[in-house]
Image (cartoon, helix red, strand yellow):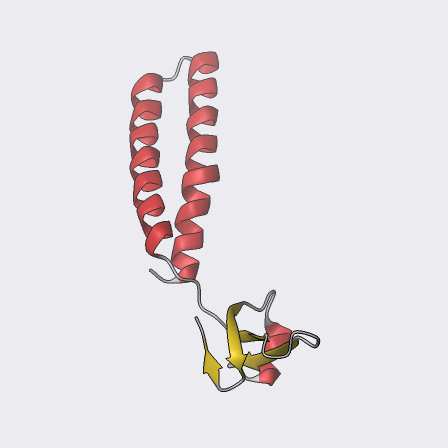
Length: 113
């Protein structure tokens, strides 16, 4: 699943569907609109199903990485951090965040993880 699709469905399941269900139920009670319990029950079933699907997807979802943070422990007195950025540098200012995967290394040529 693409990150933006996952984020959209997560927002839908956590905010929009429960919010709309609460709004409709409240207005249905006040204005005696039809099928208040049926509409809310249907929305709750859809929302529960979406929550289950998203939870399964969360376990399998690996967010895209912009690069690696390599941690060199070969010299205990002087640890080294090496940033290996895969995203073109001219695209980074357009991003809200940069995601790096962390990899310990014994020397900068061999990763342990």
